[in-house]
Length: 184
Image (cartoon, rainbow, N blue to C red):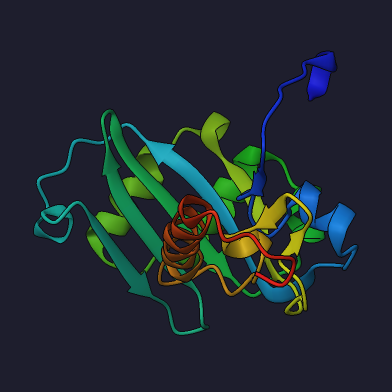
């Protein structure tokens, strides 16, 4: 581990997502950019808007862009997704990224405008969306890949997280059974 820390164990389970460091060692494949990037941020906004009554909402724009928002203890977190290469966003200041989101959503619902107006520029981050090709093996000895580390997929609709939970359950049952044959 980082800093020279060492742990002993029987199994290493890589549940570290599409950017898995352990998958990179096992499979050594490159991520595939999905053509979408997100600008995320936080707004200190206490809203009783009905759109947030369930805790979150998503709205779609006319250019294939979207804004997903959810409540958190001190306001609202948002993720604005659009068709842009992440390298373009990486070279843009946080303040200008927030301005881009505000301009792109200027004619959207009032709640969207309120959230982006209340956003803290220091909270702005970016990331691209990636997947990888399916791997032929999810195991190498006592190293197991689960979730997006094993079968990365589009990061939408909770597919990766849900698959990771199913993988974890199946692996726990397999490990609990003691049936770890070479082809398991």
